[in-house]
Image (cartoon, rainbow, N blue to C red; front, side, top):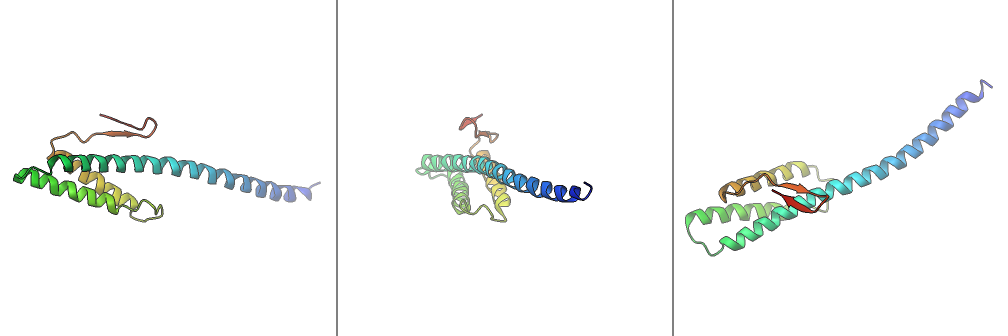
Length: 127
């Protein structure tokens, strides 16, 4: 009987490892999908915000409006260069933080509070 214990231990380990791997893959996929949806929602909202304000200010010719338009163009450019299709991009978080910083700068120039909370559950903005 004592000779069977190592064999059962090894088999149990292998079975547990296989089940754990499958569960980990499924959990990782769910987490990645949710996190990706949140980032996509945030980036999409920022882009919509910037494009709308760009349209609203395009006919203004004063210096203050020109500065706002340049900041909006910079934000739009950063968002358009963001690598949506590459989840392994090593500077994803860094670029996302730069976009968030530029968004805050644009909001400041437009005299708008930048403390939006993006809600993936309800797909809406909360101010």
